[in-house]
Image (cartoon, rainbow, N blue to C red):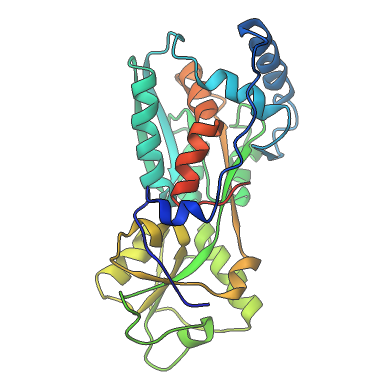
Length: 299
């Protein structure tokens, strides 16, 4: 354990330690074969909407690889993506790349706590794609019947302790956060990063009372950056994306609280064609590369 290096979200420092295993393409079978495979995959996704599958499924990944490069697809309009706050930097980059590949499409993001976004979707907020920071919050959407198919897990993320640069309080473990006078920010228990924090604290047998509980992980990290708190439990990707504004400290119990991130096209998507294409791009090796360089883990 110790202070982890803090590169930028697109830097090679975090990505090199998490090398991408690139999926295989369909190869020379041609566009008709690619379309047939993709159609079979999408048909299979229409059943059992309450389940979450993995992006590395041996059938899904090759079909996605073939479909994601469809620069000739006549897509247009706005695709609205609701995504967990911890995906802000990487999805913003992915959105720019997707728009470059599909000049007729505008990607609009709404970032926030996954539970809040899920509630908005079930209450009828217009959106095309939902990417959550946990299968639990995705379950809110699938149980309401608002997912077009089975959600697919595309990355995972783990917690770190975020502290001021250089770790002036010499915090090394979760137990140090419970020390006298240490001000800690946590995400609210209903938010995926908060639920993960509670799991990690329980596994480490540490009890602490945070001075604030935030509604998303970005807010918790900001408290550290501004010096309002001494430490916060956030994701590794948030520390990596902070570009030196905080230091990150690994801790063993983080392994017991790794979050999985599922994505789905929504049943009432205003722009279903562009929504499907965006999801396919996210699951492609090109999309995976951006996510892994930001410090996310493979599914």
